[in-house]
Length: 177
Image (cartoon, rainbow, N blue to C red; front, side, top):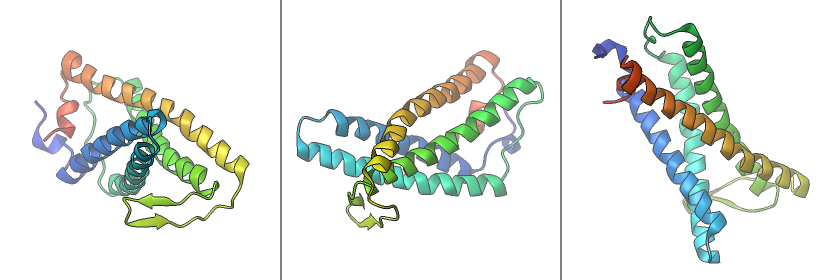
């Protein structure tokens, strides 16, 4: 079992699981918006997807700032250097992918002239020009980016489970209350 000083703090743990939940729900509603049979369900699902994407974007930026000012506890000394590099790379790519998905989703809609409502409370301002090619390109990047996210999440979750059940080095417990 990991000593208490080897765990992430409560803020980092909350941000991690909040982000995970927001992304999971955003993915579900993103898929619903694509495959829904009614225009009303599509609009509602897209509103939820956009809102959670915006919230995740803000939280990821906050997480990056938090991580820069509150370093992660050290990885086990026995962990091979290649795994430490893989963990750092995967985390960095997850942050980058989440930010890129939010930005490309925003540009894809804003460049098409669509309002981007956040939970029906306010609309994001359009800071990109109206441009059909830019919109389509951004939307394509957003669509393909989801598969990058799925792969990175599978790697992240798979590695955590591997370390918990096979290596038994306490890695998963560092992010668990």
